[in-house]
Amino acid sequence: MDRIHELLLHPFVFPVVISLFLLWSITKWLRKPVEKTNLPPSPPKLPILIGNLLPGGRLSLPHQNLYSLAQKHGPLLLLQLGPIPMLVVSSADAAREIMRTHDLNFANRASFKVQKKLLYNGKNVSLAPYGEYWRQVKRIVVLQLLSNKRVQSFRSIREEETSILMNKIREHRGRPLNLTDLFSQFTNYVICKSAFGGQYNHESENSKKFLVLLDEFSDLLGTVTIGDFVPWLSWISRVNGFDKKVDRFVKRMDDFLEGVIRDRLETIEDDKNIGDNFLDILLGIYTDNTPDISIDRDSIKAILLDIFSAGVETTSTAIEWAMAELLRHPTIMEILQNEVREIIKDKNDITDDDLEKMQYLKAVIKETLRCHPPIPLLVPKITAKDVKIKGYDVSAGTLVITNVWAIGRDPLSWDKPEKFEPHRFLNSSIDFKGLDFELIPFGAGRRSCPGIAFSNAAIEFVIANLVHKFNWELPDGVEGKDLDMAERSGVTVRKNIPLLATAT
Ligand code: HEM
Image (cartoon, rainbow, N blue to C red; front, side):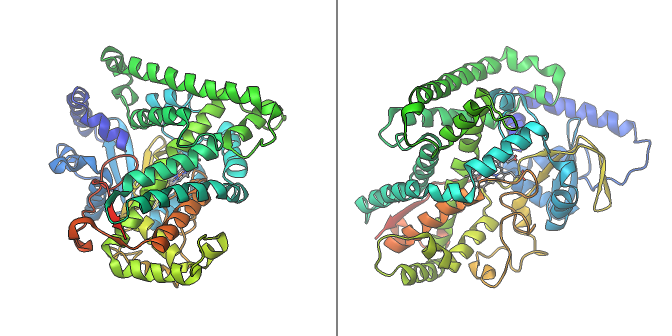
């Protein structure tokens, strides 16, 4: 969705899209459909649709816009993006029908030119078309890279990075800290070390270089070109130099990753610590030649980039929103602190067994992901065949967007949805693992997130430590209720203003 809004906001592309859209809509309007279909409700077309997509510049937060549209027109909404029909799903019921009953029909992804270039022609997991290749790489990611056992084996990395984070906070005790930056560094290094090994630490020039490349990578990943929607206009991104810019970046990133792989292949044979990072595991599969499972070098690079782009910002954003809500609700912060301090007492280290006992901590995290899903619009899917959803006809080739942010605010699923109230989860079995469709921040079905255990282990551990070791307040005597909770646009939606707080 973010790609779509970047497309529309591009100064050169915008007028062309709008003209095409008008032309297409007029033609379609004049040529009324011949066969009788029961289409999901749409906002009145032309020019109101344009108005609906652009009210007061709020296009930058499309999940909020689509939420307002769904409140007017219902939980299944059909929009037109030029020639492409787009279905917006905003209720748990409709999401269940799509991702459980008809999951196979919705297992494919939309494919955009820039993403394909950046991710080795779709050799990553998250954008690979549904099929044998995707099945194989998803299996590798689920069973080998992100299994519960593997996540446990990364415990020392979480401990090390949490201890670095706590020391930084200690050094600045009594002074305001930019928690947003600190949480980003934390997840960057947790994933860097899990991916490449412990030598990719804060001092390593290679990890600094990689993190700079990753920033640029994330920016480009959120871009579409007009040629994605109107193929005969593909020349525009050639003429305005955008294609060249992407090609140059792809080469720089590839040179870097090739260097990492080359260096590792040279040392791996003599190394006794093989296998406890993503790169070593993938190189093991690459060099092993087991007949039922094989990947090439491009797959290794694409999978590594996928894990960084899918895992870093999402996890740090979840920690940021959780701390923001705790600062906004001092009573909830106090209940959580009491729970954590009661369980840990004066021990210094928090173990996995301790975390298991922290039911209120788990409730705070669920409530955070309900109110602030880091990816409010699930990664778009494409329907393979015509299908009926909730009695409506949805045609093959429809782009499907699930608005998890709207589902988390649906009064049919939640009592007082506007309130941040972790208690609602204490006597409830609702979880975010993809079985309870009112809470699906990680998606559901075949294309759901394989990183739940990895991110949850990091989120729980950091928050427990933050509230165990420090008391927190907002700088300059700002009261919790006045904390600015506005969102910033992006594929991952974080706080608009960085979160500043003072540890005492
Ligand atoms: C709070 C943290 C995270 C959130 C909220 C999150 C959310 C999501 C969502 C919404 C999807 C798309 C699901 C769908 O289309 O139905 C997804 C897919 C994915 N996520 Fe995550 N994610 C998180 C952390 C991670 C981490 C830590 C990793 C890896 C280390 C990861 C790897 C992936 C991959 C590879 C996919 C693609 C799956 C596929 O297409 O088959 N995620 N995630």
